[in-house]
Length: 574
Ligand SMILES: Cc1ncc(C[n+]2csc(CCOP(=O)(O)OP(=O)(O)O)c2C)c(N)n1
Ligand SMILES: [Mg+2]
Image 1 (tube, protein in one colour):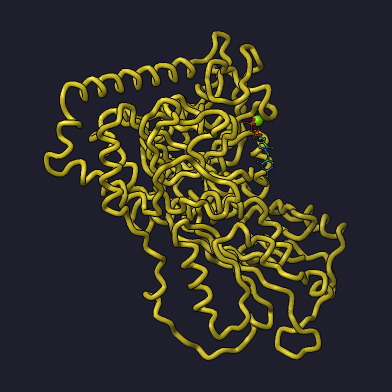
Image 2 (cartoon, rainbow, N blue to C red; image 1 turned 90 degrees about the vertical axis):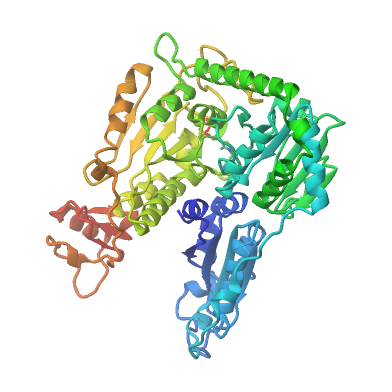
């Protein structure tokens, strides 16, 4: 959730986990936050460092020995921009600010702090620091010679191409790229969609989202790689030997990747927005580039681009048709979703082998509206979608507006990785409604959707393979309980329509402010009588009986650790 919130808003989020085990429980989430450049501060305690009461906070529990490990931060350090132990309380504000400075400086990402109970319980004199001194590092633009070189190369190129992956994290970048593509008519933009929508689908230069395999990479004579981790996969698709390649990136060396290189002749550590604006300003200044950027030859290029764009859209439209027997695949489903969902829907995508189809059909155009997991740790999108919805509602509320509709699109295997039990519990408990679409191809990389004519570089299904059976979950809202819905043929799309039509009226999806009340039995007028006596923990049987007797349909979760009643009261100890 923290990751989804941070990606959408760029505001760092805090996560607290329990010592070494909680840190391990983060699992792939830290990988995803790192690859997806999500600024998240994780804090964990460390087992007490004294055992005879030498300091306040000394060991008092059996588990304090068991959870003591040689270097707890190393569990996640290699995924973090910064990982440190708080060794004293006296400079804790500086340490937290230092961690946040790393998290918020490009490339943004997760940071980790841990500290023993003695440090947490240390008494310190209250003190203040000047918060204004802790802003993140500001990245510069391109050297002026580089701006000229890039502008000249783009203006003189036969087939210019720009490849990007994270450019859209700064929501101003897609608009600037459109301006660049309108200025250098003929420029095409390929989005590797690491996690952000970088270039809108309604521009003729749009090549869609591709993972490093695309014909334009093979044929382009000038390529600008802009904030991108994997512009192409050279064993499958590589640029021409004589292509002029410029690499502009916040991290052109890819410092956390042991193996990374591309055959760029020029590389720069620079901010994407500043760089694009610099190149644009030069291209538009004076008469210098006018002859190259206007005239008959340029008009022809522009017409050819429009034509190829039209063909691209037509091919997508053909793929989006259901089969004659009513079976359909991801493309049709997503085309329907695009029609049915509000135009400014936020998409949380973890569609694995279906990602291109989803992107092709949804054709996102609004900066920040498409967030793809970005990393490779399956299971991101459940929490990610909740975080996006929470962020959207909360941030909108601050402006007196309403949040946006959030849709999670997820593979069937990945859905299970996302710990749906927790996701829907949180969704219901805190009233965070999202729509989940499960792309159920009954497995992975196989038995897939009835799509067979798409050159994506993936192992693709053959014609006639069993159809997809997508499944939708609308998470609970005030008036609509969670309910799964299976859609197996295009004739079932009325159910999709019904589903989406539940979105309005607005009260169905409007998110009441998240309750800040501490969970307590007090909120429940039907408090059940406690079966245990004298402060003893109730036995499991007693707990079950307790649950069974609860007139408010109490349910018991996690072997009795969490007892919850449907009337929203909750007690986390029994
Ligand atoms: C945590 C984790 N475990 C395993 C993998 C390896 N892996 C990559 S794709 C995949 C299957 C995904 O299945 P599904 O969500 O059904 O997507 P599909 O392949 O059908 O598109 C697996 C297990 C991974 N990326 N992350
Ligand atoms: Mg699958």
